[in-house]
Length: 72
View (cartoon, helix red, strand yellow):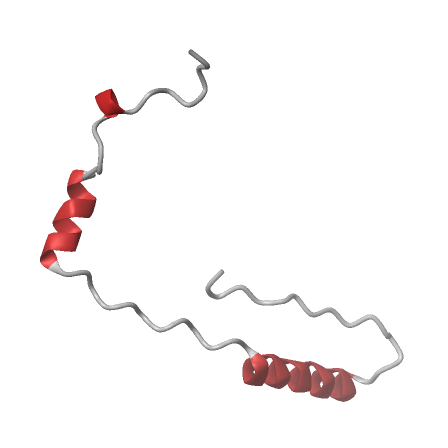
């Protein structure tokens, strides 16, 4: 999920606003520093590969393949 962030919430009411802000800032810095790197963008398929995917090329036609769910 791109852009998904954890929702942080202060639970301990005894912290001062400055302390709470420091904790939240430290947690956000930690989350930014340890986030996983994005997967590298794959290169575009060659023209013949793209054409085959768009045409939905099959190895065998449907007439040659019997239905595997029917025991005849």
